[in-house]
Length: 386
Ligand code: GLA
Image (tube, rainbow, N blue to C red; front, side):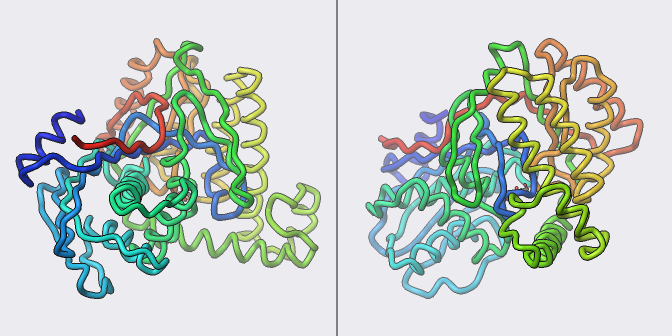
């Protein structure tokens, strides 16, 4: 793929790019809506990615061709970057904006962006895109950013410029992902460990089920969930806890009346999900994939009933998974309200499960889903474009 993209860059701009930056999308194995709640997550990078090819130019213009949108957009660095264009270029503007705010001054570029992560599918195409841009600018303009700084800047560009108040999980895994591994990340301390996920060797596979459901409401509902979780924690702080990780089940039950139903449910999800991530890490260390699968189902139930971020299409994945003998576990992945889910299956059963699920979706009159057999891949890479 690299050669083809380098040739396309040359056709457009007349010479080879100076850098070829690529960053992966992700699935989150377990630990949903826990990152911004300073809890635990267990995501993996996948073998779908965004490639950002770029060369410096001297006149302060940023000119970018998007292969997905078949469109060129540009902006000038001579002017303040203060308003969005309302499309894919905003991510690039956002990265320049945040870098400038931090005192760095990357110059103009000619760039070409390509990706095979389905957009809006909950597989973090935007985080992969942001990370690929930061990484390219870091190399081109010798910004000397650490890997962690890159992940944080990519997240800040999305929070403060694009306007989506996401946590750090997606950008983090896009930077730090490792083939055949998941990352057990504590989103409070940012300490992390790689946890082997040898699916192939164990005769297992992960199927991504993209519901195709548009996530129009996702941003506002996501922000509401964040506020509700913050509200719940605020009340629980009166009992001397710092974060959800300090809350035990007895303390939670004791606080039920004080929290009220909504806050109680949101808190229960975060507290139990943190516990499930820890259990999933131990299960993986013992290579107990049945236990991992059981935890995936439980996570879905909690997201559906307590955090209330599922939808009928994602619930169908869970229900089909429960009834399908070779499915060890299944759940929604990412923010929810549409987007994608994952199923952990015996490898040989992937085609029949796909068939079953798409048949059921059709019977229900749902939008036609898409499926991806993903492999667990490496994190962001930067190479010379020559
Ligand atoms: C989105 C956000 C992440 C995380 C998940 C839910 O993917 O970008 O930061 O909050 O939702 O776990």
